Length: 265
Ligand SMILES: [Zn+2]
Ligand SMILES: [Zn+2]
Image (cartoon, rainbow, N blue to C red; front, side, top):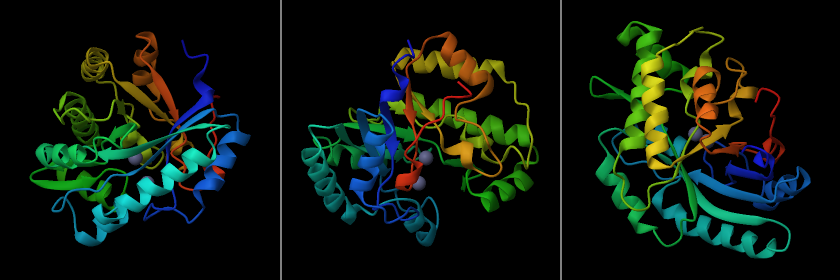
């Protein structure tokens, strides 16, 4: 089932990423070929709706709408240039933001014909009408103070992941759920043995029903306070037990990071 895991990388960023690097698309592609990939998807951060966070932070997180045409054109170009050597797909990493479903749907519909593949990720969780970026330490810590326990942060995060799977985002909703244990990004600083079997089971059942794929994401391995893949632990076990499709994602933000590590698989 998972024998061919290493031929594809379904989650890569680009020089268009505001918090990434200026490494060229060609350097990402060359590295992917060198690492043995035969198929890749560029998944730049899809523009986030206004109002979720400050304008300054939004600018750091995702593309702006006006940057999309240049992105599409550039990916189209490498796709053609490398077509004999590797299959390249144009995609986006779309933020699932609770309460913004209609806006996200409208935005996706606009690019319907150009999007070939994609990842739907939870980076933001909503608590008492405020949004917190779960992978940004100051937000994580502010939320911890307000919500009062790590377990509640984990509950909120996984409940949001479940909502992202169940949400109606229209016909062009991505079919792959991004790094579904991202909440563990600071687990070395804030240790948590989370065992909400019931919630994990609900997530796995929903993934199965929707026939979604799971982004088996490598980014956490190199994060100072994480050192594990997303998903990991019990959730990964349940996913494997159900034989749900895992698609590797280097989540590279520079060419050097276009690699995968299956040692913990
Ligand atoms: Zn990023
Ligand atoms: Zn992400």
